[in-house]
Amino acid sequence: MEEYRVSLTQFEGPLDLLLHLIDKAEINIEDIFVSEITAQYLAYMDDLSELDMDRASSFLTVAAQLLLIKSRSLLPRPPAEDEEEEDPKEALLRQLREYKAFKQASETLHERFEEAKKSVARLPEDIVLPPQKFELQNATLDSLYSAFLDVLNREDDTSEKQDKTQNVRPDSFTVRDRVVHLRSKLKEGRVRFTDLFTDASSRMEKIVTFMALLEMLAHGEVHITQGATFAPIYIRAKELSDNDGDMIYMDEVED
Image (cartoon, rainbow, N blue to C red):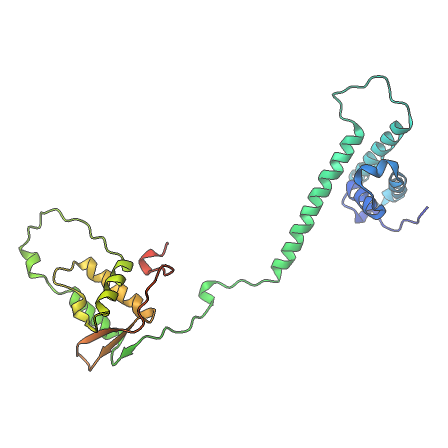
């Protein structure tokens, strides 16, 4: 008989040993009882002394199952058997199939874990983006913001005459809609910054319009120019987009 050099301690249990013998013999699980697997398994029992009592007993239990199944295959079957009791052969085969499925799944997960250890994830804040380039000629973001504050704080004389107890409908403005509105105005030519807002514009409309202008500036759709300090600021088209279906504006970003 072939010399056995593999120690029992290298196997996780008796089913692991059986699968090793099956793979080594290159046979199907169902064929173990008509092969030399039982004899090879029993040959390993000489190494039981190196195992603790609990593990050794599990190997002996499977050895007893193999001998029982082998003896049943050699002896005539009794005339009647308890049908409710599971056949020892089918029970052992079921355990082997289940153990093999879990072992293969475990090996697959281990391989994926090892591959994942080779990957290094970077948080969004760790990625340094190139600075945005804005088209500001003789103008600054500070001057643009200052001009917007002047527009925002501009009082509407007609609003003071209105009854403060009247029902006011909530404003419904979106950056996307205001971008479309600004594009239509800029297609006619350059626009003075203050002309982007009307006296009838509500505070919310002014804010959303300014947000839309900043979005267009970030996407390179407009030029912003100012002749000199405190001079009027003008907006003119650069490369207006015809389709922004793929764009996500600042008021559409989910928290």
